[in-house]
Length: 121
Image (cartoon, rainbow, N blue to C red; front, side):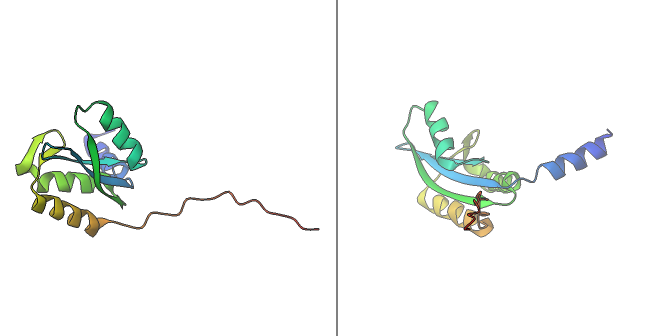
């Protein structure tokens, strides 16, 4: 596969629906802007395992292109970035991040439910 085909393939497969989330490490002023394809509470439990500070949920949004929107948020707040996906936020930064997440938020698709057909006879 040529490099241009590979780049095009990566762009197409990079589009995935999922959840953007914002959490904080209590008492630190540090906030994580992250993404997950699964349920946010499960992701927070995973984060808590490796963190010496209590992780608290702040906000999440379901979006159609989680990779793109996470990158955009990281770029927007890169001047406040500490390490990895952790940022030092003041209250105005938190409000702005939540607002930006709300602007790209979509309705979650309904989960398909296996309906049993009841035959009356």
